[in-house]
Length: 77
Image (cartoon, rainbow, N blue to C red; front, side):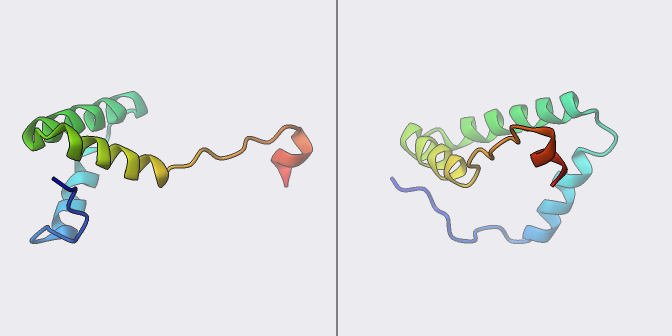
């Protein structure tokens, strides 16, 4: 089975608003925990390891690490 990356939400803006709202007033650590729990719940719902691995690879490819400045001069630039 292949991961469906085509738009598939009836109301994507409503979902996005609900997702953003779910993070309101949470500390960074709480927000990260919410994200982790949501990911695990949705992964369980999907249930297909191949699809989940495809999703991880696509998400990772879009989150390439950024280079950290090696000096104060670079950080100020």
